Length: 134
Picture 1 (spheres, helix red, strand yellow):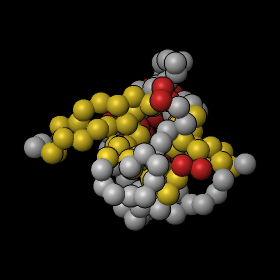
Picture 2 (tube, rainbow, N blue to C red):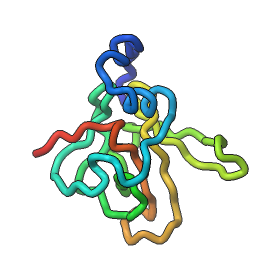
Picture 3 (cartoon, rainbow, N blue to C red):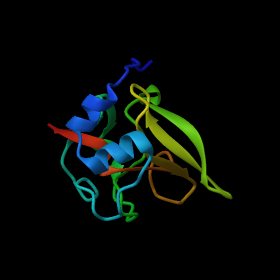
């Protein structure tokens, strides 16, 4: 199970750029095709930019063409928390949050027909992560 941590919001706000803070703490979204990791093929571990928890590995990253980095699975089932998102009602989405610090990462979608082992697209904002290259 992911270790729960509490973040000091003022320290986090000072540490992060404004867009990263808005995405991570207020559920904003970066514009499509602008993120640093959208087309990255660098091998490594993607970590939460707020708390450094391991979220995804490059082995599960794929090019979906959606404009955001896409993965077919998180590193571990307990690395993330899934929450029903009705902000675009009547459309219901599944929000993805860091299980350690509860920061917003993006959304996960199923059944879109991508040829990946899980038939899932974990659509994650680049600004919510840091890539630890191997």
